[in-house]
Length: 493
Ligand SMILES: [Zn+2]
Image 1: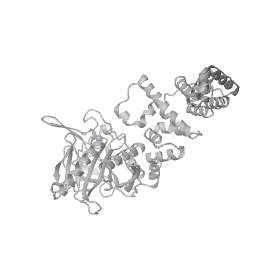
Image 2: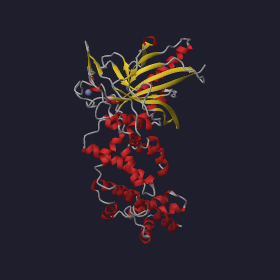
Image 3: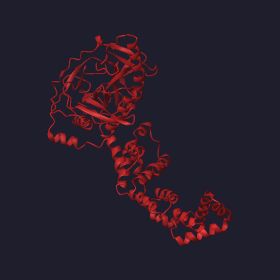
Image 4: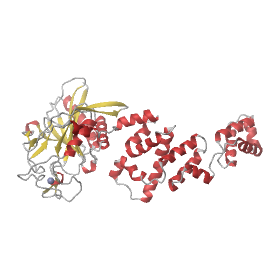
C-alpha cells in the first residue's frame, strides 16, 4: 500500500517594531543580557500591559498580505504554563479570537503554482532565552515580551520540498510587507512542524506528530526527509503511531520523542482581564490596508508580462527589490525593456560588485541573505542618472554605436558619470554608417586579401567573415557591421 504525508506548519515570526508588545523596552537583538527589561516584561505584580499598536497593525497587515479575513473582534488570552523562560507563568496570545483567519499563500513549486491555506495569523509574545552552561543555566529576558506572530497553515503540504518552498515564499512576503526582517540567524523565524501519514488517497488523518522549535528552513526540510519515511515504515510494520512531540537533532540527523499526548499541557486559557478586546475601526483598517504591497509572485509575473522578461531576470528583480524598482523606472520608458534588463543585471551588477569590494567593507552573511538590501547600499553611489542607461540602449538600438563600443561607454559613464553621447563624441566611438566610407574600407580589404576573395568565390563562407573582420579592423571597429556585410557581399558578387 502507498502512503502519503500530511503536513501543516506553525511559523513564529518576530515583528519589526521598535518596542516590545506590552511595554516600552527596546525590541532589539544582540544587547547585553537582561538590559532591555522592566517590571512589565519581567512579570512583576501590579503592572498593566499596554498593547503595541504597530504590532497589532503588522499582524492585520500580514492577514491582508495572506488573503485572510480580518474579524472585527479579537482578544488576548492567557496561556498558563510554568517554565523558567516565561516570567509571568503565562503567555499572552490570541486563542479563539485571532486578529486574522482563513487566508492562503500561492507560491511556485515544481514549475506550477501551489496553494497552502492559512488557518490564521495571530499575535502573541516571545519568551526569554535560556542558555545552558556546564553546571547551571542562565535566562535572558531581553526577548521576553517581544511581539511574536504565529502563522498557522492548514495541512495542505505534502512533502519536504513543498514545505521548504512554502516557508521561503512566506518569508519573502513578510520581508516585502515590512512585517519582519525574518533574519534566521537571529532567531526571528521559528517553526513547529505537524506531520502525519495515511494511506494515499484516503481522507482520515493519521496520528499527529509535532516537531518543535525548528530554526532553519533547511532543517525543516531535512527533518521531514527523515520523519516521513520513519512514520511510513512504522505504519507498514503494523505499529500504531500515537500523537506526540518530537525534537529534531540536526547533528545526528534524526528526530526523537520528547513527550506523548498523555503528558500534553493543559494551558487553561482564559481572556486576559487587563486587556480590552480588539475592535478595529474602519479608519484604522484603511490605514493598515494602505500599507499592502505587491507580493513577490505577483511582481515576478507582472515583470514577465509587462516587460517580456524571462523568468530568471524577473526573479533577480524580485529578490533585489531596489534593483527591480530601478529597472522598472527605466523600462517604463524603453522600447526594448529586455535590453535595459541585460545592462542592469549583467553589466551594472558586475560593476557594483567590483565597486563595493573595492571601496567598502565586505557585506556580512546576513546582508547577503537579504539580497533586497544589496543594491540599496550601492545604487545610491551611482554617478550617472537612470536616463543614461536608456540613452545607451537607444544608441545601440539605433546603431549609433556598436555593442562593443557600448561596453566601453558604460565603463566610462560608471567611472565619470558623463552622459553616453558625450563619451561617444569624446572617444570617437560613433559607428560609421556612411556608406561611402565603408565602401572604401571594403575595396581596400578586397584588394589586399586576394586569397580570401578567391576562397569566397569557391564557396568558402568563412572567408567572408575574415574579410568582414579586415574591414572592421580598417575602420578601427567603428563600422556598422550590418552595413559592412551588405556592402562586402555586393562587391564580391
Ligand atoms: Zn519591558
